[in-house]
Image (cartoon, rainbow, N blue to C red):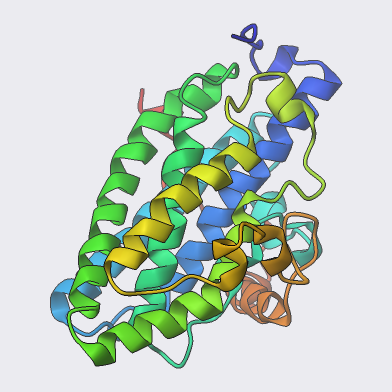
Length: 282
């Protein structure tokens, strides 16, 4: 087990760079996914699902808040972290920035399932992190992500109960599977993340665990995964833009513009806090 790291003001330059590198990926994934989920409000197929997706979006936004707060330990402001940061500086996986396919609910559910399985693995790899400020937040986020995963699994079973629904799920899997693999890419992340024990499981290991979970579950629903996965060659599926290295799809530019429009049009120079820093509530 790696030695415990010091508090934010006592980290070496390399240690701080590693912590920041991980935090940006955690926070940016949650923020951008939350933005996409908000597009489903009042459009979900039932009132119950509308409320559920709204709650999930709020949860993901809260998780982003928890991670961005830790970046503020290093002197950054919320405006600098979100509203004034260049779009190419975001390090979320391109998986979370993709628009939903023609408003198909199956697309939202498949996306949620893929992400929630990956997020559960990622959080479990942070439970014994060497950076205490991260460990303090993992339990709260993990408990909410477990609910998100249950919601997605239940809906997948419901959608695949007939041929028409299974076809829609299959179409979403075909489209999203390559991009889901970007969740497990390093990009230009600091190699010290693993070396310092900030994360206790490698991305390659987590990808294998993710595949061992999602592939048999989809098969049990009559949904197939791409041939490259069946042949043991997932790297061949990776899309051109990974996100983790700063390369994004054109869809991200449009979403970022929408996300920051009010801030820009109102001429703001600082952001109003969306929710309280949990440290202030202790």
